[in-house]
Image (tube, rainbow, N blue to C red):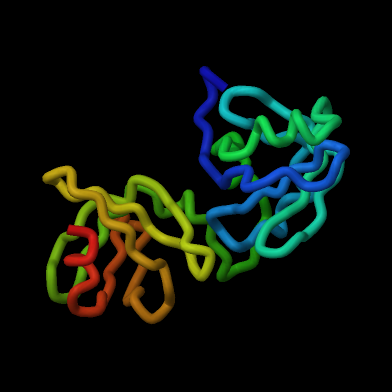
Amino acid sequence: MANQEMRLIGKIKDAHGLRGDVFIIFFSKDYSWIDLIDEVYIEETPYEVIKAAEHKDGLKVQLKGVTDRNQSEALIGKQIYLPADFFFTQDKEEDGMFLSEIEKFKVIDKTAGEVGIITGFSSNTAQDLLVVTSTTGQVFEIPFVDAFVVEIDHENKTIQMDLPEGLLDLNA
Protein backbone atom coordinates (compact mmCIF):
# COMPACT_ATOMS: atom_id res chain seq x y z
CA MET A 1 0.00 0.00 0.00
CA ALA A 2 2.90 2.37 0.67
CA ASN A 3 3.87 2.60 -3.02
CA GLN A 4 0.33 2.54 -4.34
CA GLU A 5 -2.26 5.32 -4.25
CA MET A 6 -5.33 4.10 -2.36
CA ARG A 7 -8.94 5.31 -2.17
CA LEU A 8 -11.02 5.20 0.98
CA ILE A 9 -14.29 3.45 0.05
CA GLY A 10 -15.96 2.62 3.36
CA LYS A 11 -15.59 1.21 6.83
CA ILE A 12 -16.39 -1.85 8.89
CA LYS A 13 -19.53 -1.07 10.81
CA ASP A 14 -20.02 -4.30 12.74
CA ALA A 15 -19.23 -7.98 13.17
CA HIS A 16 -21.80 -10.35 11.66
CA GLY A 17 -22.37 -13.84 12.99
CA LEU A 18 -19.97 -16.13 14.80
CA ARG A 19 -17.71 -17.14 11.89
CA GLY A 20 -15.90 -13.82 11.46
CA ASP A 21 -17.98 -12.09 8.79
CA VAL A 22 -17.94 -8.29 8.84
CA PHE A 23 -20.62 -5.77 7.87
CA ILE A 24 -19.17 -3.06 5.63
CA ILE A 25 -20.81 0.23 4.71
CA PHE A 26 -19.62 2.07 1.62
CA PHE A 27 -19.50 5.83 1.16
CA SER A 28 -21.04 5.37 -2.28
CA LYS A 29 -24.29 3.46 -2.24
CA ASP A 30 -23.24 1.68 -5.45
CA TYR A 31 -21.17 -1.41 -4.73
CA SER A 32 -22.17 -3.40 -7.81
CA TRP A 33 -18.45 -3.68 -8.61
CA ILE A 34 -17.72 -5.75 -5.48
CA ASP A 35 -17.73 -8.99 -7.51
CA LEU A 36 -14.80 -7.60 -9.53
CA ILE A 37 -12.41 -7.42 -6.58
CA ASP A 38 -10.37 -10.18 -5.00
CA GLU A 39 -9.09 -8.21 -2.02
CA VAL A 40 -9.63 -5.08 0.04
CA TYR A 41 -7.22 -3.22 2.27
CA ILE A 42 -8.14 -2.65 5.89
CA GLU A 43 -5.82 0.17 6.75
CA GLU A 44 -2.56 -1.16 5.26
CA THR A 45 -3.34 -4.87 5.43
CA PRO A 46 -4.70 -6.70 2.36
CA TYR A 47 -7.53 -9.19 2.95
CA GLU A 48 -8.79 -11.63 0.35
CA VAL A 49 -12.55 -11.39 -0.15
CA ILE A 50 -13.97 -14.92 -0.03
CA LYS A 51 -17.64 -14.02 -0.25
CA ALA A 52 -19.77 -10.86 -0.24
CA ALA A 53 -23.54 -10.49 -0.08
CA GLU A 54 -25.87 -7.51 0.18
CA HIS A 55 -27.03 -6.87 3.72
CA LYS A 56 -29.10 -3.86 4.86
CA ASP A 57 -27.33 -0.73 3.53
CA GLY A 58 -24.01 -2.45 2.86
CA LEU A 59 -22.38 -5.82 2.46
CA LYS A 60 -21.77 -8.83 4.66
CA VAL A 61 -18.24 -9.93 3.76
CA GLN A 62 -16.20 -13.00 4.58
CA LEU A 63 -12.46 -12.22 4.66
CA LYS A 64 -9.73 -14.83 4.46
CA GLY A 65 -7.99 -15.14 7.81
CA VAL A 66 -10.87 -13.67 9.83
CA THR A 67 -12.46 -16.80 11.23
CA ASP A 68 -14.29 -15.88 14.43
CA ARG A 69 -16.36 -13.11 15.98
CA ASN A 70 -13.50 -11.84 18.17
CA GLN A 71 -11.36 -11.21 15.08
CA SER A 72 -14.21 -9.46 13.24
CA GLU A 73 -15.06 -7.33 16.29
CA ALA A 74 -11.44 -6.16 16.40
CA LEU A 75 -11.94 -4.70 12.90
CA ILE A 76 -15.02 -2.58 13.76
CA GLY A 77 -14.47 1.06 12.78
CA LYS A 78 -11.49 0.29 10.53
CA GLN A 79 -11.45 1.94 7.13
CA ILE A 80 -11.59 0.01 3.86
CA TYR A 81 -9.41 0.97 0.87
CA LEU A 82 -8.97 -0.11 -2.74
CA PRO A 83 -6.15 0.78 -5.15
CA ALA A 84 -7.06 4.02 -6.94
CA ASP A 85 -6.40 2.56 -10.38
CA PHE A 86 -9.22 0.03 -9.83
CA PHE A 87 -11.76 2.80 -10.36
CA PHE A 88 -10.24 3.92 -13.64
CA THR A 89 -9.91 0.47 -15.23
CA GLN A 90 -13.46 -0.80 -14.86
CA ASP A 91 -16.09 -0.58 -17.58
CA LYS A 92 -18.96 1.61 -16.56
CA GLU A 93 -22.27 2.66 -17.99
CA GLU A 94 -22.14 5.64 -20.33
CA ASP A 95 -23.64 8.00 -17.76
CA GLY A 96 -21.98 6.33 -14.77
CA MET A 97 -19.19 7.95 -12.83
CA PHE A 98 -16.98 7.00 -9.91
CA LEU A 99 -16.69 9.62 -7.18
CA SER A 100 -12.91 9.38 -7.42
CA GLU A 101 -13.14 10.94 -10.90
CA ILE A 102 -14.18 14.29 -9.40
CA GLU A 103 -11.71 14.37 -6.53
CA LYS A 104 -9.71 17.62 -6.63
CA PHE A 105 -12.42 19.32 -8.71
CA LYS A 106 -13.27 22.90 -7.75
CA VAL A 107 -16.80 23.45 -6.39
CA ILE A 108 -18.44 26.71 -7.45
CA ASP A 109 -21.81 27.73 -6.03
CA LYS A 110 -24.20 29.88 -8.06
CA THR A 111 -24.51 32.40 -5.20
CA ALA A 112 -21.44 32.00 -2.96
CA GLY A 113 -18.90 31.58 -5.76
CA GLU A 114 -15.88 29.33 -5.23
CA VAL A 115 -16.46 27.06 -2.23
CA GLY A 116 -13.27 24.99 -2.39
CA ILE A 117 -11.70 21.79 -3.68
CA ILE A 118 -13.15 18.27 -3.29
CA THR A 119 -10.72 16.53 -0.94
CA GLY A 120 -12.73 13.42 -0.10
CA PHE A 121 -16.12 11.76 0.22
CA SER A 122 -18.44 10.69 2.98
CA SER A 123 -22.01 9.50 3.39
CA ASN A 124 -24.93 10.23 5.67
CA THR A 125 -26.62 6.92 4.66
CA ALA A 126 -29.16 8.82 2.52
CA GLN A 127 -26.68 10.18 -0.04
CA ASP A 128 -23.05 10.66 -0.93
CA LEU A 129 -21.37 13.76 0.48
CA LEU A 130 -18.56 15.76 -1.08
CA VAL A 131 -15.90 16.76 1.45
CA VAL A 132 -14.81 20.20 0.24
CA THR A 133 -11.89 22.16 1.70
CA SER A 134 -11.81 25.94 1.20
CA THR A 135 -8.64 27.96 0.62
CA THR A 136 -8.82 28.98 4.31
CA GLY A 137 -8.91 25.35 5.43
CA GLN A 138 -12.60 25.24 6.36
CA VAL A 139 -14.16 21.86 5.57
CA PHE A 140 -17.70 21.50 4.20
CA GLU A 141 -19.79 18.38 3.61
CA ILE A 142 -22.08 18.98 0.66
CA PRO A 143 -24.73 16.48 -0.48
CA PHE A 144 -23.87 15.25 -3.97
CA VAL A 145 -27.40 15.14 -5.33
CA ASP A 146 -28.84 15.95 -8.76
CA ALA A 147 -30.92 18.79 -7.30
CA PHE A 148 -27.75 20.72 -6.36
CA VAL A 149 -25.53 19.90 -9.37
CA VAL A 150 -25.83 22.31 -12.28
CA GLU A 151 -22.87 21.09 -14.36
CA ILE A 152 -19.82 18.86 -14.04
CA ASP A 153 -17.04 20.13 -16.31
CA HIS A 154 -14.38 17.39 -16.57
CA GLU A 155 -12.18 19.45 -18.88
CA ASN A 156 -11.88 22.38 -16.44
CA LYS A 157 -12.23 20.19 -13.33
CA THR A 158 -15.12 22.18 -11.89
CA ILE A 159 -18.57 21.42 -10.53
CA GLN A 160 -21.14 24.18 -10.76
CA MET A 161 -23.70 23.86 -7.97
CA ASP A 162 -26.85 25.65 -6.84
CA LEU A 163 -26.77 25.11 -3.09
CA PRO A 164 -29.71 25.93 -0.82
CA GLU A 165 -29.34 29.12 1.18
CA GLY A 166 -27.69 28.42 4.54
CA LEU A 167 -26.19 25.04 3.64
CA LEU A 168 -22.62 26.30 3.82
CA ASP A 169 -23.38 28.10 7.10
CA LEU A 170 -24.31 24.75 8.69
CA ASN A 171 -20.68 23.69 8.34
CA ALA A 172 -19.25 26.99 9.66
